[in-house]
Length: 410
Ligand code: EPS
Image (cartoon, rainbow, N blue to C red; front, side, top):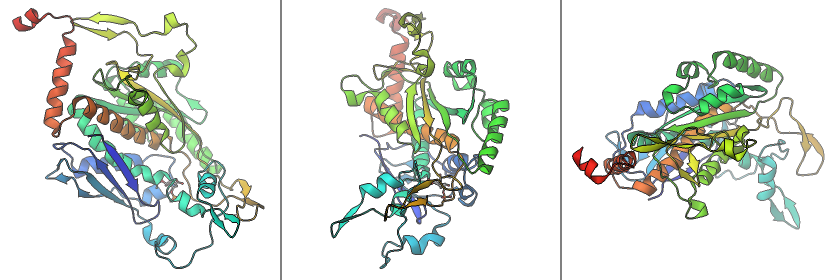
C-alpha cells in the first residue's frame, strides 16, 4: 500500500490537519518523539516572531493506540497559536467579503494564485483574494510534514536507515568545497560533525561558519531582507535496490527530487557531487566498484547513492537550493490586481530565512519517499514482517560471492 500524505488547513486558521495513509502497524511513537521534531523546527534562528508563539502541541485523531501505529490511517492536527485573532477574517461562513488583498508580493505564489482562481464576473476578470492563496502557500503547512516524517523515520530506523541534514550555504556564506565534499562522502552519521550541528541553530556543521551565518541573519533582518541558501539531506544504511528503472515514474531519484521541490522556496535539487563534479571527465567521475569481502562497495559516492533511479547501497545524498523568501521590508513595488496601478506589496510579518527549517522538512520528505520505497519492495502489514524481509535481503547481498556450500558450512 503506498504511503500517502494529505494536508489541509490555513496558516492562520484553527489548525493544520493531515492524514498519512498506508502506514503499517507496529511503529512505536511517543508524544516526546513527535514534539521534539516540532521543537527542532521551531527553535531555529531566522524565523519570524510567530515561532516563539507556536507550541509543540499536536493531537492524534486516529491510527495510533498504546503508542503504536495500528495500520489504520494516521490522522493528526496541529493547532495554530494565533487562530483567535484571525477567526473573524477567516470565518468559513462569513456572510460578507472583506476587502480582498490584491497587491501580490513579488516572488510569492500570491500572483500565480490570484490569476489561477480569478473569476469571470460580468465580462470582467476578478483576481482571487490573495489571502486565500497565502493562507495555503505558506511554510506553516510543512509542520504537518514534520510530524509525518517522524513516523517514516521510525519505520526506516527499524530497517537500519538513518537520516541527517545540514545547511551548507546561507546567503553568500558557504562551507568550503573540500569540507562539503568530505561530508558528502560520509558513510555513517557518526562521520558528520554532530556536536557542531547540534549546537548550531542554523544547522550549519561548522562552529565558525555558524557564527558568521548568525551574524548574516542579523544583518539581513535589520536590512529588512531575506536569505536563501542550500542544504544537504542524507540517508545512511540505505538498503540497495529501492526504486526501479522499469518505468520512468518508479525512479527514486525523480521521486526524491520532486519531493524536495515541493518544499516552499526550493528551486533546485540534485544528487551527490553533481553540484560541481559534472565538470570532470567521465573516467574520473565514476564511482569505482570494488570487492569488499563477500560483497562489493563503491569507493566514492559522487552519484549520491542512486544510479538508474535505484539505490546502490551507498548513502543517499541529496542537495537542494532555496531562493530568498519574498516578503521584504519595506515591501517591494508591485501592481494592484484590481486596477493595474502601481502599489507597494502586501505587508506581512515574515521570516529572514527558512533554509534550516527546510532542511528539517527535507528530512521528512526524504523519509516519506524512502519509507514508501521500502514498503513497495518489502511491504507487509506489520513492521515486524517488513524488518524480517529487509534483514533477509541485506543478508543475501552481504554474501554475494559466497557459494551455497560455504553458506551451509557457516
Ligand atoms: C510564513 C510566514 C510566517 C512564518 C510561517 C510561514 O508566519 P506569519 O506571517 O504568521 O508570521 O512563521 O511559518 C510557520 C508558521 C511555520 O510553522 O513554519 C509564510 O509567509 O509562509
